[in-house]
Amino acid sequence: MLRGMATSIFYADDLEAAKDWYAEFFGIEPYYHVPGGYYEFRIGDYQHEFGLVNRAYAPAGARNAPGGAIVHWHVDDLRATVDRLLELGATTYDPITPRGDSGFVTASVVDPFGNVLGLMSNPHYLEILGMTGPARPAPADPAGGHRAG
Image 1 (cartoon, rainbow, N blue to C red):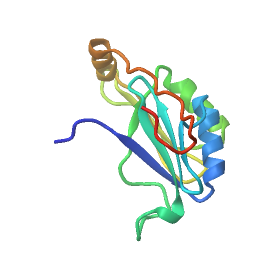
Image 2 (cartoon, rainbow, N blue to C red):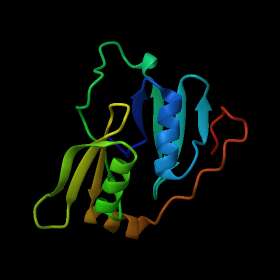
Image 3 (cartoon, rainbow, N blue to C red):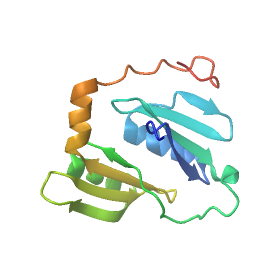
Image 4 (cartoon, one colour):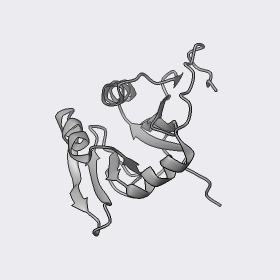
């Protein structure tokens, strides 16, 4: 049974540029690093893992084009978040779109590295967060390569 999102992985040909781009967007540096292969951030209310992997390690046959499953991240201000990502060089994949009349609104962009980043205003997310509260932030990675926590 699926218990919860553990890690979202994006591939990039230029891993350092992807790390810098996402650090700028998130406003934090990655907490974990494998030289030449991987960076990981902990983000959001539940400190979900957001990983960047050198595309050289992508599975055989992996597409190098946007598409497939899209993870939508809840954001408080969808318009401002989309605008910020576009300012940073992302392109629109799916414009801001209301999904019915219950307050669910989605959008997605393609980052400069070819990955689709889904964004969403999601009343259900806020309801669950209100019941559980946010997670504690992850400690820093003092060893520069060993996971904290």
